[in-house]
Amino acid sequence: MKILVVDDEELLVKGIRFNLQNDGYEVITGFNGLDAVSMAQHMKPDLVILDVMMPEMDGLTACSKIREFSDIPIILLTAKADDMDKLIGFDSGADDYLTKPFNILELKARVRALLRRAGTASRSDENRLTVGSITLDLDGRNAYRNGVLADLTAKEFDVVEFLMRNPNRVYSREALLDTIWAYEYRSDIRTVDVHIRRLREKLEENPAEPKYIMTKWGVGYYFKK
Image (cartoon, rainbow, N blue to C red):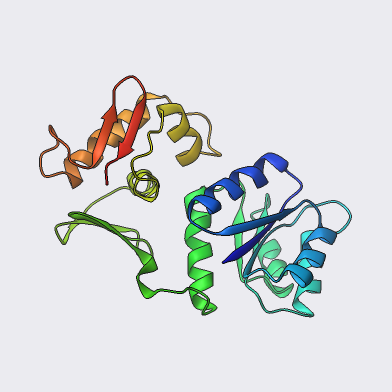
């Protein structure tokens, strides 16, 4: 499936593109409202992620213009959190609304939900990740070990989801901080170690000898598949 990402913050576009491509999506990008309208019309994406505050044409206007020729799902990104701004966004034709700063995993969850709602998701099991005894319900954001619910915090779920989506790839503590705690003030690096320890306690049969959530000494952590 093809996703159009339009924002005048190039680093943000790059980060969103990287994470969506890791999930198997084709990603095309633009940097202003005129790009958004033109690319939506001619490149036929399955979903649009659109910033509100952009040069040449703002995202609300671009959203309205896209609605003149397409009913594809549109997610608006904005730095404003007022209810009135959200109402204006929905009146412009947006399907969902996410306020900056946001967690990239929340954005990906909303992308999946909108694509399913639009009937473009290809398999009904795309809302689950299973490796061995560990299963993640991505819609409900629940984790199970051998079918038994594990009580994960929101950040613990984010960490294990990210690692499971990228199995056998080692991530440093810094990389995990940048990805999972992306737009928050930089946390203490020991935060990652604490979350990994708690995940092993909740998801591994023997936390002292983990089978899935592994350490690459001197490098970082990875999920073994």
